[in-house]
Image 1 (cartoon, one colour):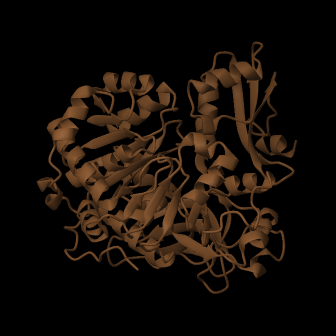
Image 2 (cartoon, one colour):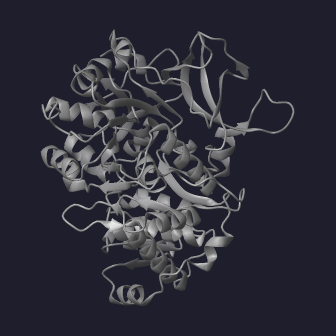
Image 3 (cartoon, one colour):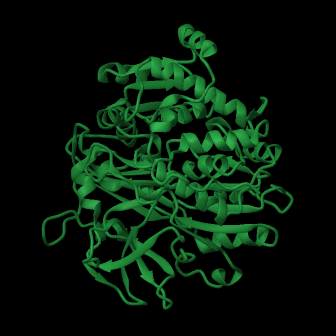
Length: 523
C-alpha cells in the first residue's frame, strides 16, 4: 500500500516534488475518476500540471504569487492547483456564486496575480479587472494553443520551493463582516497527507469522494488524502451533488471506498430513505465533520453501515490543515442522546492545550482548545491584526516562543487528560451545513440594507435536530422577507443566507440596552 513519501530534505521539500514522485511511481493508474469521461491518470495529471505551470509562468505567475481558481472540478482545475504549487505560488479556490462584494474582499486580501477558470464567469472577470489580475480561461484560443505547445517537463522553479512557503489560502467567514483567508504551507500539507494516509489506511486501491466544494475546507482531505497517498479522487460537480439519487448512483459507479462529507448531507440522504444496506457497497469508511452529528441521526447511520464500514467523526479548524482529531464511532458512543459523540484525542501530529485564560484546565473541566504542531498554518493572509489575535505564543512555555492557535472552541477535557468533548464556542461563530460562519458577518450585511434599524442573527435547532439560521430584523419602513433575501444575495454567498426572517418594529433589549439574544433564543 502506497504512502506519502517521507520528507528527506527537511524544509527544502514541497508538494510539487512529492506529487511528481508519486505520479512517477503510479504511472497510468487513475488519479481522477471522472463522471462520464475517461479517467485522468497520475502521469496525465502531472504532465498537465507541468504544461499549465509553463503557461502560467509565461503570464507572470511566480514564487510567492497567488493564483485564483474558479474551481468547477474539471481535470484542468485540479492541474491548475498543482501548477501553482510547482511554481511556488499559493492558490485560492473561488466559488463562482459568491456575490461581487464578497469577491472584492477576497481579491483585495489575496491579491491574485492570475485567475484561472474553465469558462469566463462575468462576476469574477469584472472583479479581477478592477483588481488588476489577469484572467485566463480554457475558452481563450490563445491559452489553449499555448497549453497544447507547452513542454511537460518538471518546472525548474519547483526545486527552489521550500516547505515553509504558502501552498493554499482558504477563506472563511469573519466576525468583522469581512472574510479571512487562512494560509497553509507546503509542510502543513505534506504532514497532513501523510497523517491522513496512515490514519485512514489510504492506498493505491482506494477511491475517495470529492463531494465537498473545493473552496470548502473539507476538500483538503479529499484532494490531498487521495493524491498524496497514490489513491484516486472521484469529483462530483454541484449539479450531481444537488440530486441525491444521481449522486449516490455516481458514487457507486466510481466504486468509492472512502466517503467524506458534512453530517447534514448524510442526514438528508437518510431522511429521503436513500441510505439502505445494499447502497454504497464499496464504501469501507464514512468520515464526517464540519458540524455536529446529532446522536439519534448518527445511530441510524451506524445501524445501516456500522457492521461493515468504519464511521469516523472528525474535527479540525481551517487554520490547522483541515483535521486535528478523528474518532471511530462505537456502539457504546450512541447509548444515549445526550450531547455529541466525543472528538477523541487530538491527532498524533498535534500538541494540544485546554486553557481557561492562561491556565491549563484539569480533567473534567472546560476550556478553550489550543493547538500546536506541524499542521498549524501561517495565519491569515495579508491580515496581521487577526493573525496576531489568534496565533499566539504558548503561555505555558517559558523556554522558547512556541506558536499556538487559539481555536475559540470550548471543550471538556476527559478524565484521561486526552479525550475531548465539544461544548460550544467562545464567540458568536457557528457551523452550518459544515461551513464556519460568524453570525456577525450576516448581521453586518443585513445592517447595510436600507430600512434596517437593528438586527440579531441566531442559529436554532429544529424538531428533527437540524439547525436553521434565523434573522430578527427591526425596520423603519415596510420590508418583506423576499426583499431582505434578495438584497442579501448581493452581499453573501448562498450558504450564509438565513432560512427565516422575523421582521419587527423593534427587538427586545436587556438591562444594558443591548439586543436581548437570550429572549430571542427562548422564542
